[in-house]
Image: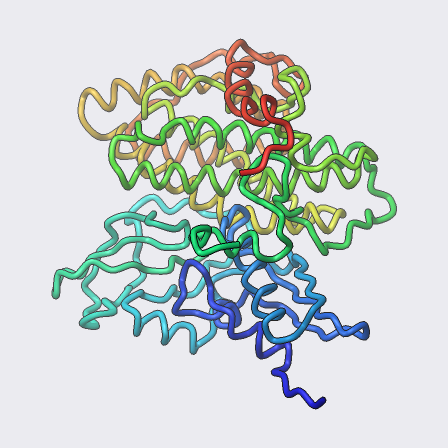
Length: 168
Length: 277
């Protein structure tokens, strides 16, 4: 019997992030490698966003389920720690999708080669345009929101609150 | 599995049929698939001890931060403290897993977190101090995250690639923690008469533990003090004149507060070993 099945890479790439479901794991940049092994199994290399990101277990389970549904019976999801994920790994498509969903994408991740400088005031100098009206006149209302990776902001022009994926 | 069992966590148990979100029962090894080889020349007992020390600091600090849930001054702050605790908990899991790989015992993260008594913990006294008020919380967070950030930055080039990778992940997280604490020290120190009074009291109480931090890592002293001075100056707070503590949690010399903290943290795991739900 001839069966047509999608490549393991395309199946894995289409799995959505449990916390930011507008993004696929590939667009989020946490999918490091998908390999079809000689024994017919698939090995997926996944990198965590934050050390304590609770979504990683769900990502593993979702990858496992998607690949099994696509006909791959042996699925191994392994962890890759290095190089560490930063928000710079979010793809251009991913950033556009965040914006379309009303979530401001992160700016460039800060480089931390030497001692990390203390940033006391002002809290944030980067311009984060409002994802609703595009105005650059927005303010941070809380650096923490429903998930560790997002901050809360408010637009001073259209008055809408919005979330931003914060630079890591 | 029938329809009634269909709930949000279903996807978590579909994969291999094992339950998760309970103690000792299927939280996957956070280092799964990472090459466990220790490079030649690395002393495994020293490496394991370092991972346990830094894991213990993170676990105990995370537990104290968790105590702020439902007690923080505002909702956003509660979320912030919980998120910071979650980062530290994640670091602890990775560090314990690495310790168990290299110390020859093959213990997993749960064995380190739940199956050791207070006398076996090597966390800093600083992080086991009772919760105190909010000024106490942010002062402790400032001291600990400033020190831990400086240390993790250096550990990014540790000869053990796993510890180096864990440290590299921790640096951006700790930068956020330190900034968050510094912002609050600024607001409280340069705030109202009452907030300033409380900041001074917290500094008086916690500053002596710098002695413990400096003893644990003398090479970080200058950098740590420089950052703390910047924060104090911006917050218009005087540098406390305090006699440094000479005891250290690194030698297992814990105070009376660690045992009750661990008792709470370990209660379910010890009452129901291997429980799933």
